[in-house]
Structure formats: C-alpha cells, structure tokens
Length: 317
Image (cartoon, rainbow, N blue to C red; front, side, top):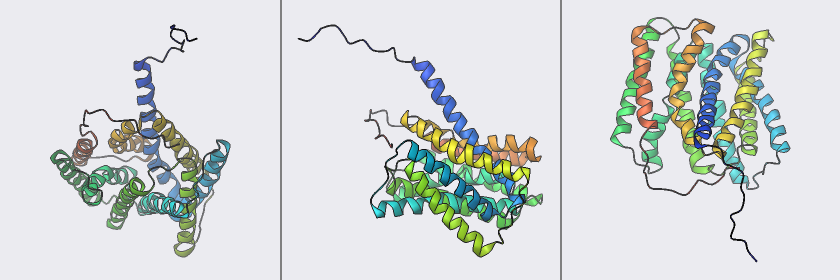
C-alpha cells in the first residue's frame, strides 16, 4: 500500500543564501589566485625560479596525494589518459608558472605579469574558434582587440619607466600561451578528470619537469629565509591545496561558470595587493590600459548564454 501523503523532506536552503555562498566562494577563489602572483614575487628573490617551483610542486604533490587517498578518489587506468593529464599539467604548471616566475626574477612586477596572463580567456576564445570549432562572436573579437590594446599600453608605460625587461615580458607572453594551450588541451582530452587524483598526476609531472629544468639551467640556490618559507607555505597550502579544493567544491555546486566570469578581476586585485606589499603603482595611462584590458576580457567572459535549458553537466568527481 502506498500513501498519498507527500514524503517529508528537509527544508532546502533559500536561493538567496545559496547564491551568496556561491558568489562568496567564487570571489575567495579569485582572491587566492590573485595572491599567487604576490607569493611568487616574495619567493623568487630567495631562490632560483625553477628551483622554487620544484619545491612548491613536490610539496603540493605530497599534500594532494594525501587528500586523494583520504577521500578515496578514483584513479585513471588508461595510460593514454594519464599521459594527457601529464601534458596538461606540464603546460599549466611548469611552463605557465615557470614563465611567470622567471619573468619576476628579471624584474617584471606582479601586477603587470597578472595583467598579461589575465588575457588568457580572450586568447582561448579566439583559438577555440579555429581549434575546437566554437563560434567566436563579434563581441568577443571586440574584447580581444580591447584587451590587446590595453596590455600593450600598460607594457609600454612600464618598460618605458624601467620597470621590467623585454625578456621578462616575452616570458609572460610564453606563460600566456602555455595556460591558453593547457585550457584547450584540458577541454579536449581531460574533460572527465577527477580533480583530486588528476591534480596529483599533473603536479607530479610538473615537479619532475621543473626539477629537471632546475638541474639543467640553475644551481639550486635556496636562501631559507622567513619570506621564502612563508611564500612556499602560502603557495602550497592556499593555492595548490586550498584553491584546488575550493574549485572542486564550486564545480560540484555548479558554480564553475561564475568562477570563470570573475577571472577578469585578477589583475586589479593583484595590483591592489601588490601596492602596499611591494609599492607597485600604476600611473594614469597604465591604469587606463588596465581598465581597457579588464573591459576587453569581460566582454569575452560575460558573453550572454543561450537561454535554452540544457541538462546539468556531468559530475567531475
């Protein structure tokens, strides 16, 4: 016999509270990502950049492995899938962060490096039209043009003021290409990657390649100062572990799109934090260039979606 009475369910959280929690978590993720540039700027004076990265990746791999084992994350069995994870990890971590760290060791400011790399969604949107067959709208092309003009304006003013080197800017552009390539590669080959076990594999590949780069190009100099230890702890715990865990939580809640749309806030947040910490400032013309860049990236990221309802994405866990 069945009852006509409806089953009793626990009251669902109000939509407003859920939205506020999701927005707060997304904003926290962007803040953590922004401070990664600050941590790098703190650490590179006390260790060679690739050596510093190798230390970060080794510690992150150990912590993420413990997390994956504790949560019984599933592990990939297909060797080709593992290879794809490794390639994406090398692009995303070794080449992207390696370029940024070496650029900072050459004098490039944290705010400038964040601004250059922040155009990644724009470059991905442009390349996706050619490589993935995705439609790039006129609004997105306008955003690309504005972002390129804005970054060019800021770079020109900074280099003209002796703040950084052309080689450092080129390395930031290499980082931009690396993270853009990693995004496209991840989308093409790693769409169903579990973020816990997959991150372990990616960080392990990054640790290996960064260590090899350190052995070939550097002397493994490390000054175990308080600033270096603080920077390592910050980058490993709050970036490699905290931000990854937060991103995993956001994706499970369906908030990943909001995280993506907030990425254009990374440059101003980084510049705001770098101002009291390092004394980095943007003059009126450079500030105008940053605003133009932010608007350009926003035009790409905030493109209106098709209102037709779609089924929810697969859980990545």
